[in-house]
Length: 300
Image (tube, rainbow, N blue to C red; front, side, top):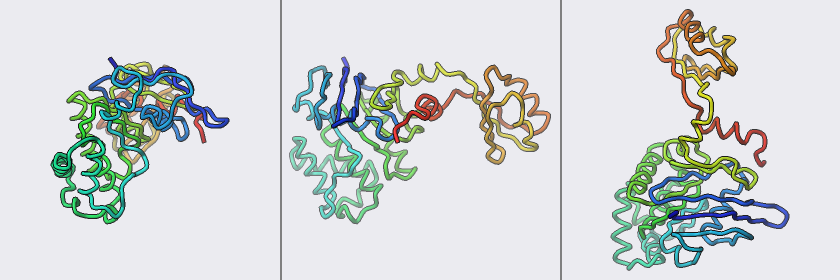
């Protein structure tokens, strides 16, 4: 039984259709990436999922039942826009958010303190929000949506404002929550995070799903015609007739072969001109699939 299910949902604002007949489902223990260019309909879809707006048609189910407000008690939501009180101390703010989700003040304080230690911001608990960096504020908001131990976690751009170290910390936490059986949906522009973390994706463009399903299966549909070469010496082999496109980053080359291009022939040519440390055929990245699928059809 899916934890969340959108079935043929449509939403229009004035003369613009934001979401058109969108269907997707997320199971317990699944990490799901909702992708798309700016204005594609990602946030509109999330808002319908959260009951912030109501679909014009279609159905939203949470935890196996038609949407009802009570179900949101088991949902953690991190919006793209920060919703923190600038002049309020962090611990007071987290306790307040915990109480909004039905926790007692003592439980909210204990959980807030434990999460602050886990997310390495315990020293900030008695500071006001406006004294903290954007990354620290993002971690506070991240904690606030987990205090009540939700079964479904919905995050709009969860890595916004995070440096690489803190992004890894959030990634690790999300994977642990997934392993515990939480269903997690996040929308992001960071394709590298989706590629590392997600089991399944839905790519939206102009309000419609253009690519949806298991990430491994999706990537398997595309030709393995990308090659990574690390070398030292003459880069003239990058002009080979086997190559459609090549980018050379000071001895690290990323190559796309022509249709039916011969990788073995290219390797032979390269070895005759340079010292080859790595020659690896790789599947297309999610970013390449995104560009190939959406291309010039993305919204402005």
